[in-house]
Length: 439
Image (cartoon, rainbow, N blue to C red):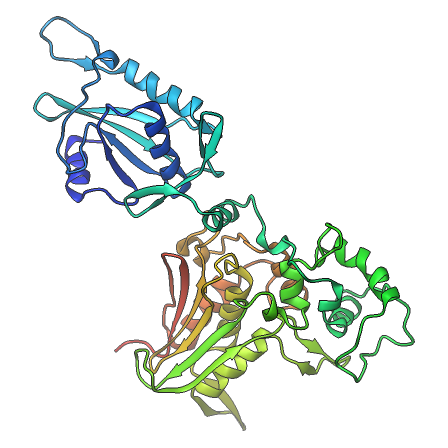
């Protein structure tokens, strides 16, 4: 880093990736700052810069070693570097080794140490007095992570799968027997685990489970992670969301809110508002016809009701053309449902239709180092692996994982020569499709 670059950083002030500190801090405070930066996206800790952006310089005489001839003015900070590295090894679990450099004479006679911290591949914590504390960075402030924030952090690093957590108060009887039969028999081609006179779906949709069926189905559902291994085998989050009779009773945030507006901004006066609830998986008949929609079908039906279609002459026949290509719409909706962060319980998936665009907002940051740019070229990473696998079984997702570049990016380009917006902002990810190319 050059002196000019460092001065520009200091002039910008502290933010989510830049922290100013006097070098008189102790090793615990240093480790806390490093942990918070690593648990977000990495950043730089500037030692010798005060909170008001004033450059106080490096003042730790015990960390300074003179080098060179007398009067040369050259200063090295080997002991300071060793102290920083040792603090990060002793006070941080798993340990971190940051990059260290000193920029001399940022102000006359005042040097500044730059401690660069990379984004942690796992979640790090401060280890002090035989106690661990997880810190996160919120803006320019470091604070201890709440249980919910910590769960999301582990989930983002791929070390925790919320979808496999048991849902308290549930059991196999809270799963829809008809949807399970359809999935295992028709989709996966497996035999039923319990004898029945027929694999045909019963006419009575309030089909009750019998005790013998519960015992027979449990091993299959535990092994496919739709039920938890923990006795008495409650459903997992994914199991209830995919095949639950009434998943929103236990997971009220597992729904989709939709609104269609007359203009280009949100307004109380909407052409339609709708909240979609129920299991993700649809229920299909033996001939493939839809008996009961899942969340994807409900969302597509809402969109179709509220976007314009035109009839075009295609040779000797007429065909219908939507404002947006159906494949791009379906891919956007499926990705929002499959990849959203379900640990964020205070917010829902949102579909907003405006006069000039359609937006789908999915709660949560992108998982495991994925960025919008990487998504455009087909980089893959799933937060909810089981949801992804089951939806792929149903044919909603491509096995190559190329849905974004093929169906959304290329699909919109071929449809109306527009570029979709893929935007990560705070704790949400937005896909924005444009109705037509700007003039």
